[in-house]
Image 1 (cartoon, rainbow, N blue to C red):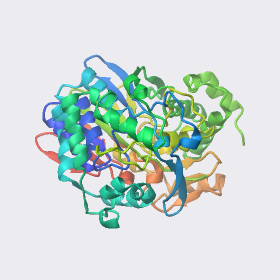
Image 2: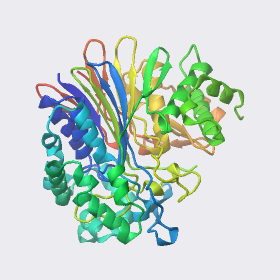
Image 3: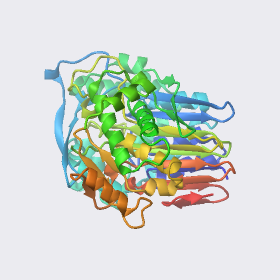
Image 4: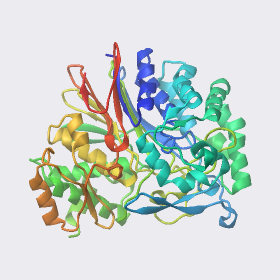
Length: 521
């Protein structure tokens, strides 16, 4: 076997698998998948966004976090000059307000991240890594049912700008399931990226398109933002739980410290037993309490003293969706990549003829809890994204992550508890019903069937403790989409793509086999 990959779309996963079959490593595969995802997962992924990758290098026994998330601009344009507008996204059971326009875009980091990771870790030429993405963009990919649904949800973002509308709603009708989505401009942009290198983004034609959009259409971005952007290589936050070692996305991101905090809480709440559903809700509520207090820096959020204080002072919603996707890869040598990328929902404007839409990170309410336009200049934005690695005493290695805004932390936490506390397979852990506790205390949970690893008794206990808890009849993208892979000591590989977000797992060996269910190879 050459490796295993799990991702949010079959075409994304196959781009990763192509690199493994060609003799590349996990990092070649992750980069190919990241760029390829910009076509079939275009609502979630873009070279105009940002992301993170947790990388384990087997030959060095070393783990590093690459932070190429969005950066706030160096100068602020007066709000009266900004293109910054609200739209309502219709999720069916609820609507949510998003903010788009050129004034909502922060400095993107995906392209610098691609070049930094390629230089540090990859073995294949950049042209080979980008080949699957170019092929998908030029020849097209059929729209899946999941992404057709996403197109409908954010229709106001995809139909206002003429160039965006031409891609997503040709003939005045949104693309539907089975229609072919093609982005030939993006294919040409990737070819230019290969020939011109990172300068294409820093000072070249892509930089000029970004500056032109910002200058002419009411944004903040300048040449200085693009030329000075820096990929940060950070030491992971390491948290132990039940003798398992978690490698988490560190501060200034919030997702990793909050997961570390939750693991510490669970270890104290139930030191000698597996946590039940009520334990999980209590832990999520404590996270919200600690986050709202804002008395402890994220660097110390998972410290024992902070956890003990929050437990001692414990006090006896609205769904939010976000454009994020995840890729997990482990190769035969034991290298692992856990990569999460986001474009928010996109700013609603096509970037010239590049085939790229920039992010709307300055319009993301989750990232600006003190209000819009109050951000500090030239600062790395925080994020809930939490690409994670777990190492076990028996040398098992798990790579996982999720999309889902503030449900990222609860989704990863519950899958980890399934693996460690309940002894679930990766398939069972990702498939198990999930719950989430919102800032206002509202509890939502996926209905628990008779065949669930959690018994119906657990549901009754949950409802007895939280009578206002809201049951969702079926698994739903609201609860995240955990795509994970695992290598166990015997060398066997396990992968699972979360069907909540149309995930796919692929094993790579003599032949490629695709499965929406977990496979042990």
